[in-house]
Length: 113
Length: 113
Image (cartoon, chains in turn yellow, red):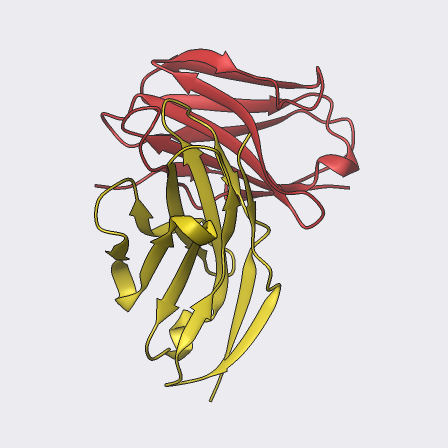
């Protein structure tokens, strides 16, 4: 079964600084990978996804993520964060032919002025 | 598109009462998922429907929980009788097919006193 680890529970970053959130997965074959963002009191919004092809994927709100098979990672990045990026971020992994998604525990991002 | 719609957004009830949560998936999506989110356990998949048929209910915690999907545009999650430990945020999500990205509703925050 697949699993996801988000090593950082909480990250604080200054507005305008770069952000990188780590995600490591465990799965034997090529996974489907997702990043979701959850603002307080809201549902999860899909930021980006990787199914196949180019390992650098672009998402909404200026986010990008890179799939590195050798490191079993799918880290999320943003070159310059805005105060509105303060939220909780979830990495998720799915398997081809399987409807289940495994979610990481989430990383809370705080943006300071 | 209106996205996934859930109601109510907040529900406060007393122990022993019946609670019904409602979900309208995105039109054309054939897969529907109910999740529960708590601080302790994160996001848990409760039940998965495909073409209105329950496929996997292994995540339903106990017989007090039941879910139905009478048609492609409506699903309910019922808890009877409710208990304080059921307090959580319940999300409904839908996807175009079983193996695509899932789109989440805003959630229902349930508090059982």
